[in-house]
Length: 168
Image (tube, rainbow, N blue to C red):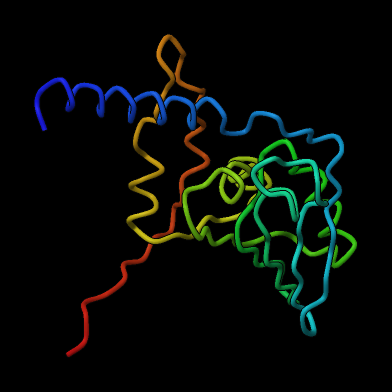
């Protein structure tokens, strides 16, 4: 591959990345999304957004949320998009009036972590792998000419764990 081919390949990759970054979170009509609740087992629920409002997730808007309701409070897995926090909380209140105590994040995508700061401000403790916290701490990719989004430090997990050493 010659230097012109390298330059063209780099330009194509940069354009593709820019398009992906610019498209994240775009085109989602949060007002149309309903949070649906499905009981999976006693005290264990799955919350998901209604279909058709999120171009990136046609079957159900955003990520799924796990909710475990216990006598001492609520344990959640992931937090959904930030604009859906009130709807997520309303769905959880139909399950239990208990406080939301802990949230475990599974991965970096905004449909799993963008609501973090909102729940921390309600008193929840965020838990995640050390690697995920490091990824969340890095500056976000920004489209050329764009400004980086405001980043609330409350979105970062405060309790982390490692994956441990491989066993022989």
